[in-house]
Length: 550
Ligand SMILES: Cc1ncc(C[n+]2csc(CCOP(=O)(O)OP(=O)(O)O)c2C)c(N)n1
Image: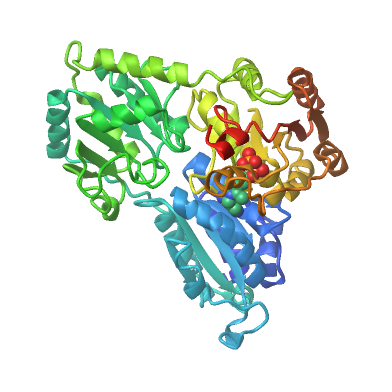
């Protein structure tokens, strides 16, 4: 039976288990939109391709299956590249389909033409173009394999417009098969012997290719061996923060006590993490290329092992596949390091208590305390980039897998589209987005998407009227010379109402709780603007203290 390219794309998506996708439409892929008309794939129509791609990233992040996004050529694809870059740095499976110019117009710089196999190579794990509609099943299934195997990442498939309209006979699409990479018996024995001989071991979890079972397995392992466990930057959902093994967040502004323990440990077990610039405190935490500590590095992609840090034991396995093998390992009675683990957890608990006072009439500390006491363990928190995110990362105690969507790539604007995607995926769970005034405005238009699909997310816009992170760096490097970091903002509560959502403005600490309760009760997408004194630039230091180095 002959089918159009558009129909074959949708058929291949269905064969690979796709139930939702994000898009901004373009005339370049009308044939796919037409095929979607008769399918049960849910199409989330977005307002800008950057947001659409970030939603697909978030689906990939929270399901482990590639998030799907469709955009048009030139301007659509360049907008989407913001989300592509996040998926690349954050190791998230995602497939971006781009409608492309017709085949006989290529290389003339036709309308909106970009040669994606040249332009997007560094943003994606693989960029392919489908020239022949009969090969759609082959390309799409391969895209799923590449996006999910080894170190996951985004794949781009370019779809020439006329190819999508061709009617051809093609093989029926089959689902991709996941590639597992288990550690061998010899490697597990080696790992076990090193652990038994260690005095001060420490585990750092990170990366992707985790799921709820793997998180439960690693928790059980840490519990049996009383091991201290830290989570890499923005991968905090990998370990229950109230578990006695939890040692803290290995990210920006790391607890100095934890940094010291990492430096002084004699066995570092890096499980799933690349230990890139942010978690490694700018590549200072672990010596490069020869760490002082014995290093066991477990990572799903061989090319990462030994790239920056020379490991003593390298295991090429995904976290899911590695932790499977830990169940058989027997713990020694009371490990030598048990007391140290306890001390590290106590240090974390102290470190994660927010300050109750600071400049201005709004105190984020008590607000965080209230959020901790009044949200469920399965609530999902999203954010982009900015100093405001410190409140969430340092003081929220993540308890469960799949409760965090935050870009390790430090991309502003991620939190809102991610919240929309997370709520669409888990409608029964509360989804709270933290954003700065700068961050929110980068993809604020996706609030309209939340309203359109009736997704009652709660967005906290922490408004200090500045691009705060950059102002902080500026005051440190060029004290008193403010340049390019002031902002003029809309009334965010009025903006929420204009979109058809619920809006609140919080100008004192006491106003926060009733505002949050009203936002919850509204059952609408809501924005709560929290007016924060710009002096409250970090939980510990004011802008003036940074400027005057006092
Ligand atoms: C897309 C993008 N553009 C620029 C930056 C650089 N940057 C990092 S944080 C920041 C300011 C964030 O401001 P805001 O969201 O208001 O939060 P605040 O730091 O004030 O809390 C900027 C401009 C970035 N990380 N991502």
